Length: 475
Image 1 (spheres, rainbow, N blue to C red):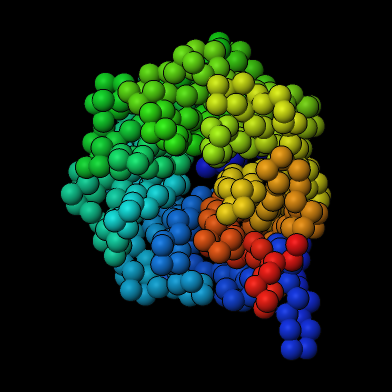
Image 2 (cartoon, one colour):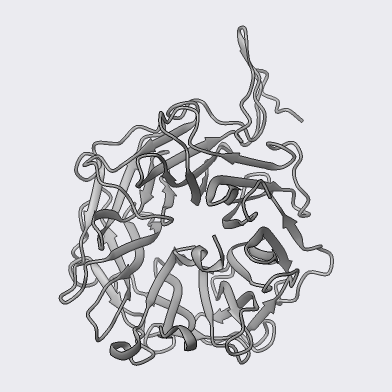
């Protein structure tokens, strides 16, 4: 799986059980969830989910929301949400039997509506972001849907619950336009931030795309105080390919940071981590990097294709940015992270982090999410290739200085497949959702593709810090 697949967006360590006591380690499966720490399921109506695209949001009461489109009948997909209880069983009080669907189904389209990101408002309303098929004149467009806390559609949002945002940068009828929301976050004032891509040409020989950023008001309309029309696009240098994966409001509430991947020369396959900082009005913050933008290349090998997929802001204003780093051709990718000063300069006190799983196949590994745990360590989640074309959930914990936390899993790493407990032949497991509970336990969510042949939800819960009966942890 190569770089483009990240955008489609996109061995478990079992504790020994002794007589009368349980000995567990950080990174072990939390056996109180589902079957020995794992849950596998379709939607309750039996429908399968969208390959690669699962995001998760943890409610304050411990219930878990999983967002992924349900497969109606290819190419027809609907936005979908499933809610689980803390023990991993379906919460039947949500929606209809635990599931909630929303079909956009625009006139003239193939009805391919794909949800990729989820965010939870303080009032427990659910914001979903992704993209929806249009007709030949518009192609795919960004789509944002809001549900009430019970899973019903919030008709007060946008137009009867949905906001469609078009960029349409090229001749869509001739060459195709693909405008996609890939992740969604909320500002402190409730406004909605969506990051993704807008392509101006889908002809393979001249493919081009830009960062695409949207800010919506709490009522679901484009925010006119954000670059006048609520939309921002950008490329980097002279490059013609860029894709944004995450935008967040910073702690100062006056700035936004967006990260992704971009080339800096037309037609080049050499892409770098790409960062930009925006003022609250959507303009570039000229005090960050060069004119508000930063590119950073690991440039280790192959086509030098490096793409940032997520970041966290640290208490001192620094940014920890992680993504997929190409280390060798044709498809050898590793987890990679770099820390940046608040000014956008790579932190000279921090050495770039490279984490290879390299279990098999073409050694294609990719991180999709990063979070800070309660102790200030970095938890990075994604997938790692085991044998050719077979992927497992992959989890890394780093110390604040970027070093692997050797108390976690196997030297700082942990992987999880579909076995044991699934009762089927294991194939693919890709984690794209991450949440950390207040007690430090780590939730991974993603897809499992097994001998059933179609993807379904997989959720894994992992012990973050081992606590013994005396109240002290393991170190």
